Image 1 (tube, helix red, strand yellow):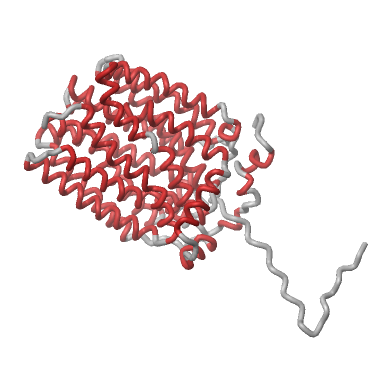
Image 2 (tube, one colour; image 1 turned 135 degrees about the vertical axis):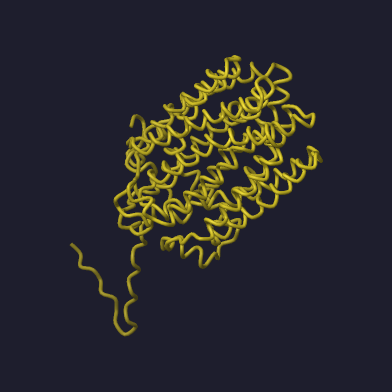
Length: 464
């Protein structure tokens, strides 16, 4: 890798140098058979189903919000604010969720978060069914959902390597399942909005959280690695100390914070405005069913990207993922250019494949390069940094569209989509990170020599 110190070229970070397979053996339940052994595990299958069903509900939500708020006289700015309320709470609090996940039982935290969202989405369904839709109430519900997601998400990172020895294969399989859900979710939401009401979508969304909580409740997780188990049992460090330690571990990895720094630009200029503006533009010009079709094409592309991630094993994962990201520019470009539904759907599929492949490469890199005892906190910093600018982009989407026009804003987003992978590939620590196929663990401390007996003088080593 050009320009990268040898210590980082070997493992990606100097901190994980020396990690051996022996140190992490037994951390995953899946047999060494790898991808073929994933679904022989009852527990991985439960986790797989829970993630797929939850994703199904999440992909239905933008359709319900856009159609429901537009029906009640709100515009693109209101849709952006409603989405930004959830994103802001999530991005602002997920770091604290990472500390909780490293100190307490992650499964219990995840189940509790699912139950909270079951209640909030049920309330939202009642509001839309009764026609009592007030923007600030929808934003409050979204904020609570964001808090619950901040508690839930950090545990996902540490759960995957506990359930599967083939971490990339597990991430690829989950990505395919979530992508299949994204393929079906918007289309189902469009049908529910067209033949029933947005309230029906919120009711189904609430039910998906109930299924996710049930799958987690039935899950039997293997024991934690020794370092993480010891921390969970003692939890003697203060909350602030844990935050500082997580930040120190995060900052020590150039490839990690480098990606997050670039991702801030991506969120504020690309993803943040693309999500609400694509939703409102397509719904206003072609109707909710057309938006469901375009979003389903995006889901089909992510299925393809996940399948590619199951088969391809690049030695430099982040470099391969960054190259795949070039494809996302096609999506905002197609909508901003006013192309027809078939062209928008095709471009959405290309965008989905690139984003999905990058997602698997990135998640696997984090889960295998970072020691298990700080993984939840590192993942929380990762998520917080990745999403910190998204609510800014979502909140600015409406004013920018009013000033420049939604089409022009989306064309700018497409241009920035091409800049982002160039920036990622320009950082040596990112493009040259070497894959690690087992979860990282800290080297065992050297044994402390026993003190000499009190009635004997210590033996001095011979010189020479």
